[in-house]
View 1 (cartoon, rainbow, N blue to C red):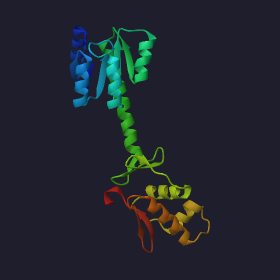
View 2 (cartoon, rainbow, N blue to C red; view 1 turned 180 degrees about the vertical axis):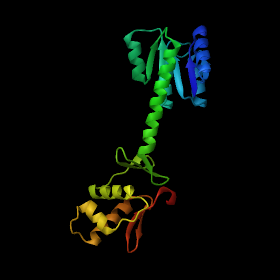
View 3 (tube, rainbow, N blue to C red; view 1 turned 90 degrees about the horizontal axis):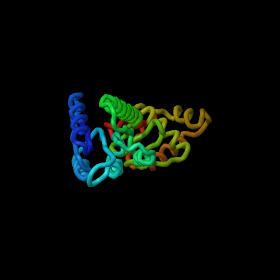
Length: 226
């Protein structure tokens, strides 16, 4: 894991960097905010440790810009400041945690490990809840929203119910009877009504995800087949 460290106190920065290097982390150290911003724009980091009171550009100013560029990356603010206004501003800007100097280096390590674990867990959840339907289409099973090129798509209640039925059974043929049972709760509706609903849903999709399997029903193709 690659960590960016902003700290202008020589002895402290050396202690932090040496400790983290010995723990197996890669650490890029900077003693002023301008150099930090130049590095952030050209390199990717997995974690940020930022002092507040630093030359040329403060840690809080850096934090504000880093949050814009990398909102999901953990950020710890370290400072000798103990006034509530500085702490509040840091959290308002988007820091993940706050450590007041002086602190035990083991505590910094524990907080880095905790925040990193939280990010990894969130990424795992997101990976399991996002279904890729095609190059452009994704479906979030947690929010039940369909996205086309990251834009939420809208449907009528029945169109949406039919969409969920297809997504839940991708690669499988769904006969008219299954659609009738799922959408109309077994109500006696004509096959032409079912066909009309399927066609309306297909017409709203920018990619032809649903195919008519003549004589059997309909099927939503899997992502690799689209």
